[in-house]
Length: 213
Image (tube, rainbow, N blue to C red):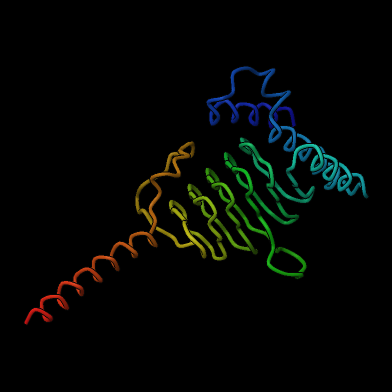
């Protein structure tokens, strides 16, 4: 557990330029507090301790605004930036070096039992307000844009944007797992609108030419 703690603190310094000292990170980072709380509650959950894991997770939710079910499995180097409103469901599985921004939900889609939450691969970045729903798999080195709603599996080395989430595949290119630039992420919907505007403008020109004749 102490090795995990070291990796979690290291992840904060690697991915948040605002982090200035170990004392600041340990005392003021709600995402780290929620994760530490989860490490303990998850251990209790795995050891079949009744009631206490859920009580501990709800206690941490009250103080951090981050809800992580004690049954969720989280790898090393996990980082929640800001974190308010993050929800991680019971059967979620999260790989190593994953970054979540505020308002992210790893949730289910109904009342089914068993595996019902997402599996997130390694080196994944999930943007602000994104919703990953159902027992789907998100591959390694995937970036999910802010406010995207993802309902289907996503292959590795992909970018997802939109509602519902659309995959923009970039083959043979490995994303930097620390890259968090949401401004320049591709937006297929915006490109389609631009194309439609050009087509409308061309039609206007044709109609204008015909009216002159």
